[in-house]
Image 1 (tube, helix red, strand yellow):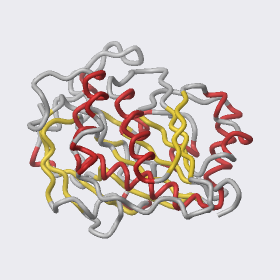
Image 2 (cartoon, one colour):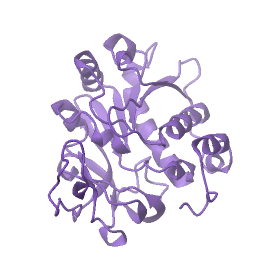
Image 3 (cartoon, helix red, strand yellow):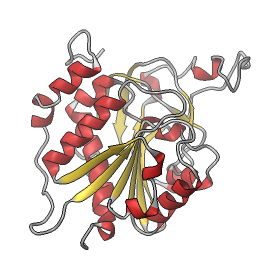
Image 4 (cartoon, one colour):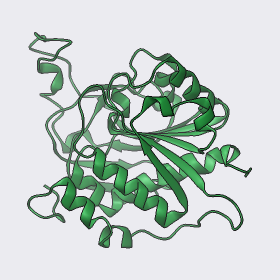
Amino acid sequence: MCETCPPTLTRRGVIAGLGGAGLAALPMLPAAAAGRRPHRVLVFSRTTGFRHASIEVGVETIKQLGAEHGFAVVHTEDRREIRAANLRRFTAVVFLNTTGNVLDDRGRRALRDFVVSGGGWAGVHSAADTEYDWAFYTRLLARGRFLCHPVQQPGVIVREDADHISTRHLPERWQIPLEEFYSFTDNPRPRARVLLRIDESSYQQDPNTSQLPSEEQPFPPPEGVSGVMGDHPMSWQRRVGDGVSWYTALGHEIEMYLLPEYRRHLLGGLLTATRHGRRHLPGGG
């Protein structure tokens, strides 16, 4: 459990406390220029598979970060909001702990065109467990799709990029009190700028969820697959057409959204996506 959090936490209790010391630790970053309409971020958290308890807290965190740092936030779980006409109102789209197939064909086309034409996309945690049969989405993730995860436990995140806005505030080795650490089907490093990786010696990768029964695999092989990757990225960025995608595997636990280090990491990803998407800024920009 998070060393800085109360012994028991509920989503309501966390949301009520989000306005406290967690945000006070974040530096104020420049807001939108005077006379210019603010950047707008669309947060999409629809699930058709596992639903994370941290979604509500994550949405409130992003809204609060937007209010503090000069971008507007709209939240939806309606896939009909992922349409070309609607996306023109936004500079970035965030997939927050989505799972399964969450878009229809029109939504897929709209999101693809939005990013390729210069928009920003950010994915949080189980965004990598989403839209498995859509090749463009695999491209957004630099082929880093969810494979499995072990039980929640502490672990050490290694900062690879000391210059990126989402990681430069972190120590070289960041001890996380409790999180669900993903392993991926492919290593994104050849196709992306890796920002964070996990020290695999700091936590136990196996056993993992590939040994558990599921609707897709009610009788999995007893050996399953290993979560050991060797080189194990946990956050990365890449260009996609004229746009950009940013992804972090962190964000499963409710307590993560109370950690100043994680909140600033998430803020950096949001700013990466919004600043890149200036061409979509309403009224020009």
